[in-house]
Image 1 (cartoon, one colour):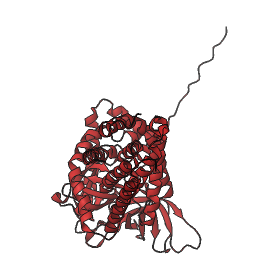
Image 2 (cartoon, helix red, strand yellow):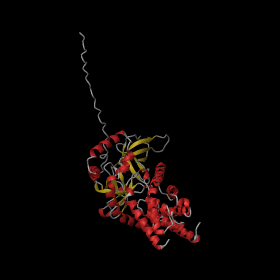
Image 3 (cartoon, rainbow over the protein chains, first blue to last red):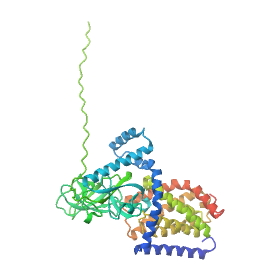
Image 4 (cartoon, rainbow over the protein chains, first blue to last red):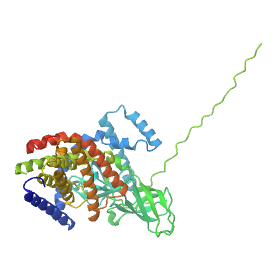
Amino acid sequence: MRYGGEGRSRLLLIILIVTSLFLITLDLRGVKILDGLRSGTQNVLSPFQKAGSTVVSPFRDFFGDVTHLGRTRNEIEKLKADNARLRNQLLQRKSADAELEQLKSVLDLAGRAGYKVLAARVISQGASTSFTQTITIDVGTSSGVRQNMTVVSGEGLVGVVKESYLNSALIMLATDPDFKVGVRIAGTQQIGILSGRGSKRADLQLLDNQKIVKVGDVLLARGSTNNRPFVPGIPVGIISAVDNTAGSIAQTATVMLYPNFSALGVVSVVLSAGKNNPGDALVPAAPQPTPVPTVTIFATPTPTATTK
Amino acid sequence: MLARQFSISSLIFLIIFLIQESFINQLRLPGGGFSLPLLIALTWAALSTPTVGALTGFISGFLMDLSQSSSGAMGHWTLLMILACYVVAFLGFGNDNVRGNPITNILLVSSASVLTLISFVITGFLLGVSFGSFSRVLITILGNGIWALFVTPLILPIVTRLHRTLFGNQAHI
């Protein structure tokens, strides 16, 4: 060390390291006071995150939109059309319209299934440096939101309430590596377990090899006891690739999750499920191919000039 | 660090933590974005003595642990930040090439930020934390490194000024 007070410095370093190791030990042993510290911090942070959400919302999706450009031609065409349509609208109005659209679709989904839902705005996204996939919403225990409730968007399953605070709740997204949900394939009713893997694609492990799954099969949430953490019938995703490795005990597949997790503005927490299981009623309609217009050209031959 | 300096530093890092949680996390930046508390703590440490560096790491790491989106155990970030800031301060203290040359300082902070994240992943695995696919972790770490190269030059003058105000004429960048 290149300065005086070497002993004191080392002693301080040791004290700090021991303190942090002590904290880790307490946390791993499940000491409640540390959970209280985190939830207390979230309660304090919640108003700031709401204020931040209001300030940031007009340009929140700017970077996300830029990175998604060029993925597919259709998306670009759609973005161009959207851009032209929205050009004359105010920036704040654009944000409000998008949220309203998400709210309408999620209420439509909940209405078809008979779920009692509570709409919520996304006020924060988990820090990427923590390697988790979480969002924070602006409703909490004061609105009846409890741990292990299903969270949906208009497109399907978004995640599950991981922690609930007074006026906010932490949602573990379906993309989180720790996320697992029991699913069934619409139609065949074959069941399996879906696990998040940190991106929009998830892994599906089927529990038997009785029936062959195929690309395009739709997955729905199987539901849990007392509908928590998952209510039945929520669309989860669509199979995008099947692993047909010879000799494997169970079939595995890659699933493309339905929601657009990078553009979540409004979601809904399912407070209670309907009396009846919706079955396959919530399977999204398959996209209809856009008819290509056929143009028929009738050519009339020009009379040839005659020379006299 | 005197009690006054410690409390003012804590307040500064608390504000930085609030900015990160309320604004930066919501921007959905490509490549996973960046962590302002991590970058500012490392920059602050690079301008400080190892003792102050370790204390800075403790304050910032503890705040990062308090984040509700933190995946590790409470104290995980605290431990890593103490070590990272101590090492950065140790390398930077008395080294005019780091303290007097902004480019060296930026490179030191950016590489320290990447190494801290790698250490977080490795120790997280040992503690049983799930981080997702390897490619995702790689993208996040590389993205953070690239963001660090862009963001550190922007925060460096502010951090230097704040540090000089609080600790006297130690930093000269």
